[in-house]
Image (cartoon, rainbow, N blue to C red; front, side):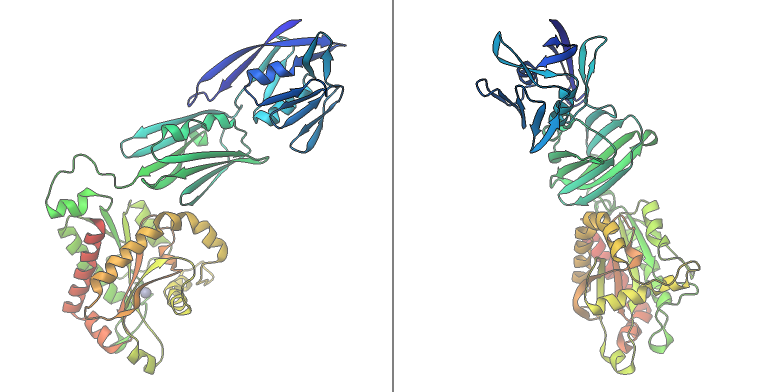
Length: 476
Ligand SMILES: [Zn+2]
């Protein structure tokens, strides 16, 4: 009888346990057998055996004396030879190597190797996932996965579940067992090993504001970055309203996006009033009001120039914007309808919406037709909505909150509230704004009194004042 060593290394960083096993091994007719009961015990697996019937149960697997078949979760696997017993011991189930190790791999979900030269069994967590680490920072947490090489990843976030799918990776789920315990922002970690990929679901707690996957080290390091909600830097002790509005919280940089511009006049309304001129003028007024309150304000355009729809939210993201506000004027066809259709509406990006809302989104998306290489598609496709899931899950709630403040601020003013004052539709200009984002239809440029109000200095100042008030309230 020779003794061999089974080395178990579970979770290198999260759970650094290395165990050595002295296992009993028998050589019969040139085949090496391992003591199944011994191995099961050392691996702390649930076990039961019926010596009379000659059945050994390890986890979900059933081994029978004299049989080469092993049943695992209703599937039969063939060993290279039958399970043997020794007359000296009634509780002995000798399992042939190496085929029995393939069953244990399925049971444990990790590779197990037998090295005949050294007569050792190696059970490594995985060849490709080297470590799982949790790093707690003041403003959040970082879950870091070290990999042997870059892998293709996909992420999905539907609150509260953040799913990271890594194609082609095999993991040892034990490496994730301590993660939730150590984290203050993750309530559960569910790693699921599939044939083609591993899916790691993090169930995120309420104190988490957003999750982001960052790749480093040429993709060999994956960092899941969890941002803490309502994080306030300790240095913020100033009580001035300007500091409160800007420095304090999450809202610091505001991106204003006056719609249309250049060759795209937007809607042409009452008295030939151009949408692109109204929104630029309101935008510039709003900019100075917000700057007075201490915010940093960026504008996608501050002159009469044409900017592609998709570029606008991208500029906002590149600037590290905390809030995106796209300014527009509504419009409608037909003299009759023009006279009776008025009011403001604040829109957030979301699938669905009424036919009326969809029509408004299509009109605003028309600008894309003027873009040189586009084919004039003015609606977001179902496939695109699926890809947008992440952005929507992260920011739809906050965007809706911002829209709520805007409605509150405008309600009872010179321009009437249209229906509920806030709605949702597929506005392309909001796609890719990774921040709370709202599109404002300030009023109907085709309605005589809305248009007149929006064209005057006084009206534009009031509109800018109302917008600023809502943003300040939202940022509190
Ligand atoms: Zn517009």
